[in-house]
Image 1 (spheres, one colour):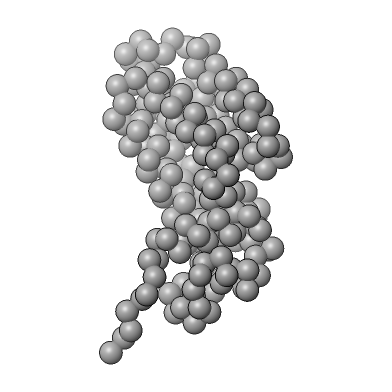
Image 2 (tube, helix red, strand yellow):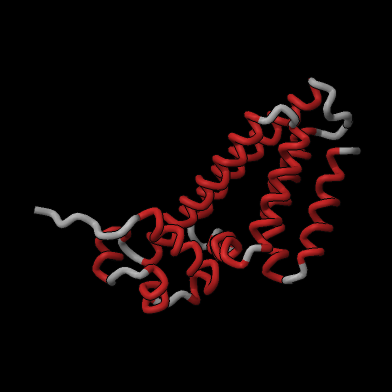
Length: 194
């Protein structure tokens, strides 16, 4: 009879996001990974396979979780502009929180792997299509409701918002100054007013 797992696989994925986010994919040795996850080597292999497999699953989990929240929020909010503002404020709050930012930094590690790992590149491409589409649909709704008065190309604006979200993670890696994140976010959101 197969032995049941003695750990929460979702919790392990969150811990993996933190470990990979902190050390990067290349800098995460097996001992560091096992210590950070709090599981035995055999449990890692039995449940996730290799370090690379765990990394890909953690990236997928992160993208699915965060992107689903963004899509749902955009679809359910009465004000598109307020929703986009809230989405960016939430990113800034997460990147200013020492515990939450550790998970966010998995993006930094994952983006480094895109040129070398087709599976990770495919995850980011699926995410890009999904989120650019969600931003575009929301912007179209906002324009139809006259909440957004702009002559900008809405597809280009959706693409800009998508990439700006990810750029904030890069900025947070380069500086601990919360004012920098807030200023960049303010300028990004000003594109909705033009």
